[in-house]
Image 1 (spheres, helix red, strand yellow):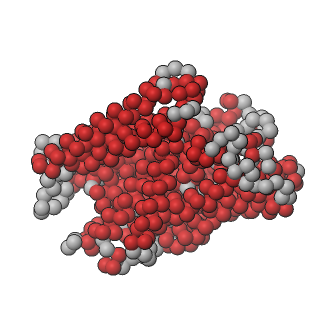
Image 2 (spheres, helix red, strand yellow):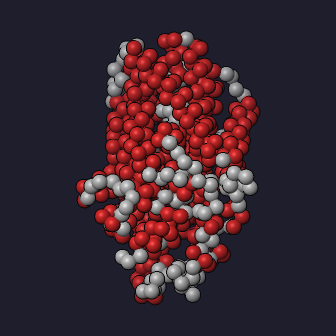
Image 3 (cartoon, one colour):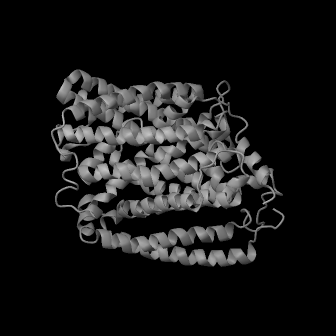
Length: 552
């Protein structure tokens, strides 16, 4: 491909309006740590629903099959194209403007909807020490969001400094939990392996949803790639952070279960008798350290909220610069050059969602994350083909076919199982989120022009559709992929949930579509089949009438 170097130079420039910040190895490690973990919070909800043994097994398996492959492709693609909104740029490089927009849209929804989960966890820990009325809890949640929004409007350097301070405090406190827990080993931490009366398949749903959510932050660093003046530090930081984060989840969980047992009582709620990591310190050292841990839990939430605001706010900025959303979203603050309106919008959405239950937020977001991260794995594969590593002068992961099989195989296996066992209602709802990306792309492309507006010769449009050349057959592929996934899923979930699903959904939701198990199955089955057929038709039409120009 003759224009490889030109393409790399172009995408590597990213947004020219953002300030550059130089990171130390420790600074980038701690920023990734805050984006992805900031403590083992959230694992508590896995334990009673999955079982202590399976929880620990998942905390070993997910880093190997999910987190490490994600870290590999994030580091490599970030080295090749160190830009803000990396997933959007990478998907655009691999599969074109439409898929790039959809990827960015799904990531925005996942961040904007899921951001509130961190704040919910923090206030849950406060509620274990201090009695909170619903009004007081809401005021604290809003205060956390407002303070960290202000920090983000000040600048990225301040975000990095705050992340480093937070990370050190969090690591020290969880190390203390680990030491105290292991010193008071009284129970077998893997018994029972799964909850009594359950089976492994039925236990996987919540476990994979929370487990994958816990490890979804590796990709966040790529949204800041254009503002890191020394992008070669990211692969180094990724290697270190993956190890730290895996141990951060695993060791305190083993220590907590070994010292306290009572797996059924673990959770992030504020119910009387509920156990969490602070309970280890309260039980064996007294209330003082328990209060200190509660303060640290708030710090942890603040650190993650702080770093995710920084990451998520960049996504609208890049779309606005590419004429794929309203231009006012690219407005920067005068002094710090931070994206003003995206940060404000993210804060408002977070404040709205902070009153949702933690598990509900995670289950809503998880199917989108499955699709998002598996899609990026395939983009990694395509970009390796388009830009062979032998011709690169930047860092790349060593390994040929075996590496590609590991990245694709691990991500696809965990992602496919995860989306199938996450729950029928969330499986069904996830396709509404998925299709919203395509609808938004069509609307914004026609309204604002997209890449064609600035470079019409390089990014030509179909004069009839006003969309990019090739978008008709790309939409065909879109509907084929998600139609077949929806169709196949209707049979898999019917088998998986069939023995208990009808009664469960009726009891949980009472009335309406979500209470009708077989109604949701029918919608998935027939909409999936119809979507796949529509996809084939669009693909055939697109191949005949919407060919990409040879001069592009």
